[in-house]
Length: 481
Image (cartoon, rainbow, N blue to C red; front, side, top):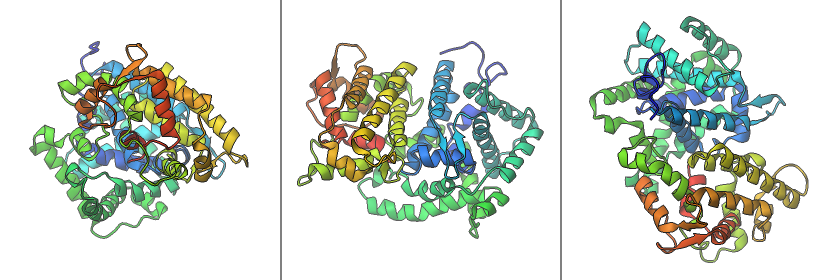
C-alpha cells in the first residue's frame, strides 16, 4: 500500500481516515448515488450520453452498481488503486461523445459535466446526512467539501473545478438547477426502471413471483422517496408530482438508515454487504483478507474464462439456431435496450469487460479496437440500408456463419489477459476455484481438469457470440441487471 502521506490529512484527503471513505462504504451511500444519478441525468449532456451510449436503459441496476464500486475505488487506501480508477474513468469518458435529439453535442469528458457529477454527489451526501439527522457543522462540512474537491482533482486534474468556497458552491449548484437542468428522457428511465430491476436476494431467488410482488410495492415507494428529496423547482420542471406522505417516508427511510449505521454492527450495514446480497456479480473493493488476496488474480485469470464457460451446453431443446441467436441479441447484445445493435452497444460490452477485469490501458485499447473492427464488419455485411444499426432479425439470420477476423481478435484479447502465465493454456480448475471463492458461484460446464488451448477458447467464444452456446455466468455479466 502506498503511504506517502497519512490518510485523511490535507496531503491525502481521500484515504481511510476521510469522511468520504467512511460514507462510500455505508448503506446510505446507495441513496446518495441514486439521487445524484437523477440530478446528473437532468443535465442535457449527461442525459443524452446515458440514453445514447449508456446501459442504464437496459441495465440500470448494473450501472448503479458500477457507480458505487467506482466511488469506492476512488477513495481506496492504496493510492495506486485510486490512480488506476481515475485513469480508467478518463479513458471511458473520452469514448462517450455524440449529439442528442436536438443535434447538440455531448462529451462525457467535458470539464463542466465532470464537475456537475461530483457536485451532485456532494450535495446529495449533505442532503441525505441531514435528512438522517446527522448535523454537518461548519468544520465537518468544510472538510467534506475539500474531500470532494480532491475527488474531482484526482479524476480530472487539468479540467473541471468546483467553486473554491462553499458559499460559491451553493450559488453554483442553484444556478445549474435553475438554468441548466432539463426534463430529459434519462431522468424518467432511471426513476421508472432502476428499482423495478433490483435483483432478488438469495432467499427469494427461487421464488420470482414473491419477489416481483414485493418489488412492485417497494420500487415505486423508493422512487417516490428519491423524487421527494429533489429540489422543488426541479420536480416541477420534470413533471414529477410529490405523492402525499412521501416526505414523511423519505425522512423515515433516511433516519432509519442513519440509525442502523450507528447502532448495528458495521459488517451488517456496510454497502458491500447489501450489494453482495442483492447481486452476486458485485465484487466488494475490499471484502476481507482472503478476498483481497484473490481479487486481482480472479480478475486476471478467472473471470474471462467464465465469459465462455457454458452453464448450458446448447440452446434449449427444440430451439433453432436463428431463434437462439435472436434470444442472444435481445438479452446480451442490445446493451442500450433500443431494440437495435449499434456501436454504443458494442462499446458498452467492451467497457463492461474492461471494468470487470480491471484491464490496463494497453489491453483495454486492444479490446476496444477489436470491438470497433467487429462493428465495421457487421455494418459491411448486415447494415444494408446504411442507417448505422442492425436489427435482431438481421443479426440472427447471419450469426451462425459469423467468424470474421475481428471477432476472432476479440476472443484472442480475452485469451491473452486470461492466460496470465503465458503458457497458451487456461487451467479451468484453478479459474473455477477462484470464482467460487470470490463470488460464491459455480460457473458449471466442462471437466474440472479441462485445459483450454487458444483454439478451443476461440471456438467456444465464437459459438457463444453466434447464440449457439449459452453461458449462465456470461449472461449474468451482460444480460442481467
